[in-house]
Amino acid sequence: MNLSLVLGELTKGFGKTLLLFAITLIVALPLGLILSLGARSKFKPLKYLVKGLIWVVRSTPLMLQVLFVSFVPFYGFGILNKDLAGFLGVEIYSLTFIFIAVAFALNYSCYFAEIFRGGIESISKGQYEAGKVLGMTKSQIFFKIILFQVIKKVLAPVSNEVITLVKDTALASVLGFEDLFTVAKGLVNQYVNLAPFLYAALFYLVFNGVLSLLFGYLERKVSYYKE
Amino acid sequence: MAYLQITDFYKDFGDVKVLKGVNVQVEKGEVLSIIGSSGSGKTTLLRCINFLETPDKGSMVLDGQELFSSDIEKKDTDAELREKRLNFGLVFQSFNLFPQYTVVKNITLAPTLQLNDKIRQKNLELKKQGVKFFERRTRINEYKAIKKQEIEKEALSLLETVGLTDKKDAYPCELSGGQCQRVAIARALALKPKVLCFDEPTSALDPELTGEVLRVIKSLKNQDRTMIIVTHEMGFAKNVSDKVVFMSEGEIVEYGTPEQIFTNPKNPTLKHFLSTVSNKEEA
Image (cartoon, rainbow over all chains, first blue to last red; front, side, top):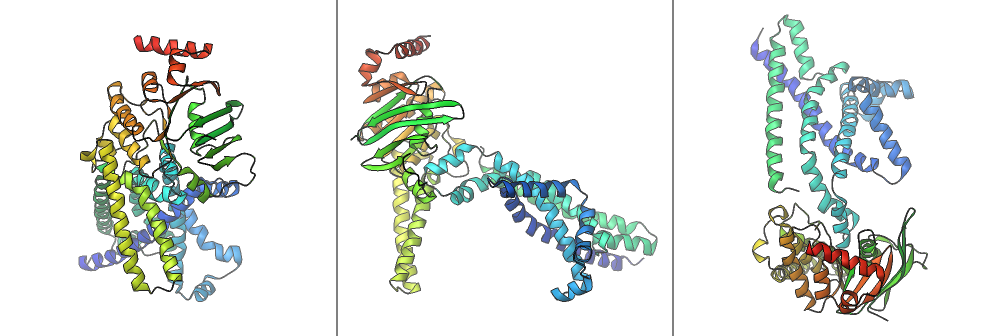
């Protein structure tokens, strides 16, 4: 077993893991905020639609969702992946990644939505009323007063989800996406040696360590005030 | 007609009739105290005046302008509602300061947001007049800098009024309850309301901290501010008010000068209320 070769392969896999991780967060954090507002909407149909979506997504396995999304074009609309990739102007390989990213982003936005909803609902009514009597608009109240307090409250649960996401990226292997875990599994089989799993574990460990430090830093940053 | 004229306010919450035809008049520069036991509708009345609740029936005229009338079918737009609210300031029982901002930012936040709106409008006007982009930007920036300084200066002078100049960069969590409430008063004053309302401003405070807040309110009376104060502090109400109303079960039972209310109460409910309150104070 050539160590530098193995580490090189694993690093490439880790790059893919990072890509999925980043895209999921970039989409799911704002989408989660939008969904949390939808779940609190006074417009009943929207509220129940969003609540229903959150219920379905949180109640079924992420791996199932990944497979489901990848089957939708063909079983739902009779479109071959080859044709869809051609239509979108991407390689089949990238199409697989798009399926995975869609499922991940949707899944995580639902979890974030529930975290944000809890955060928003924990802000006292008095904060909104203080904004109102000071003549602020609804969006000014939300963005200038409420949002920051919500962010402070949800940092800890969000960091939990983010760390889980790092490990969940391994589920992308179900579609053959060459993330860190998939690559490690391949190497273990190829060399009949467990070491690649240990190296992969080290990658996950170090990355999550960095994330923990980052969130710790952010939590200290917003702890300059108390309620 | 009085400066602030409230006519026939009715408000139900489900089956509970909280306001049952309340009439209130306040003259300019006058201080009106509202007293009464809990659940008598004092706070709801104050919230209706500040457009935090909508009365089911009634009308309100301030300074000759009709702000609310249940006879008018058309609902106010958000912008109209905001404009109307700005006639009033409200100091809450629980302060409701914004915890993430310093004391001075708490005071300047709303005026700064208003300034930003004004700047947007001014920019559009200049654009219409055909002023070029760079010229426009220079003029807007100058205007903004001057106005921001004014807002800051005003905030500092308000902090002086409430005696908290040295706390301007502190966060609300670093202040005592009494200090928080004084900041809240300064924050409400920064928008120059025509009528300043207080909703039990000392009820959430430790007894030894109520004095500093009451002193600030009293100093505002000396500046001829129109104020409506919902309070449980009978001594203070007697001392600072020009008029006092006594509310019971959603109605105004007695209205008069502090002497009339506290020394010569006529209504038996008021007499009973005053005797229980004074017993408590003696105990």
